[in-house]
Image (cartoon, rainbow, N blue to C red; front, side, top):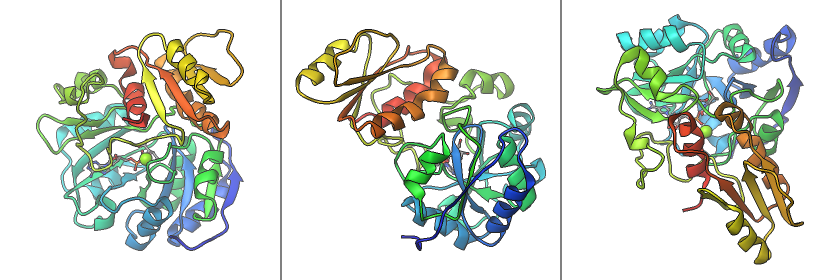
Length: 337
Ligand code: TXA
Ligand code: MG
């Protein structure tokens, strides 16, 4: 357990972040403290990546297994290259096309990167976030920032500062609150240390977009309909990104299942694509039909169902197409086998 401390929550503009709170946050990071900050995907929990003791506090605050490495966030290409032992041409091409943005590249690590960041592996995950607050904070701190999602380990990622506070209150020094994050799902993670490059986690940058820049990548093992779940990345545990209430996914019409659970006396939360009259005791959330809007709202919807105290969550699966890959991946991980 990390030592109990006061968590300061400071509002900051998402588009034109004020300098004073960023300066304070940068000071905390330079002093070895922990700051949660918004990125364009989800809120991250940051520490100075060069400082192994600061990074150890992240693991303690999250209750994260030491075997699960962290993504290091940078504000410049130069910083990215300093973290990697090698900067192959696909890295240069992808950084040029997608950075800043929701793409994480796994590369051979530079010796200087502390073991705790990479969980002792020879590789390091690097990303340059696009959110104005994240960019300004990293640039001001003038440090690479190791940052997992700002939630307790294996719980839902936070898309609002309130989600961070609920999980990590008293365990971290500061939260920069810039409102809801726009992307809503964690970054795409691509391993460039293998041939062909391998998709470790689907995200808002799709396999087709990656392949348009660097040619073939391996990603079919992640096909959402594949019955077995590969564990290509230490963090990709099967049950992950989970709400408190057991969640089940239903293809096609979920109403019979919702009705069955309701009849059994359970308070059911339902993520659905259609509106209809519902019996009391079923809390339905109508989800958007666009994958990007759906992604942006998914975690907030699940957090809200947890807040409502539902016993069970039923989710109508979106179509099995590439544009829904990341959403379906997270739903599958959130579901109880
Ligand atoms: O959008 C995001 O990526 C967010 C924001 C805060 O940037 N961060 C995030 O971090 O989702 P985290 O720690 O929740 O997820 C990082 C994932 C984990 O699955 C981890 O195992 C994997 O990236 N990862 C990190 N370093 C790796 C490495 N060297 N090799 C393979 N996988 C790695
Ligand atoms: Mg996470």
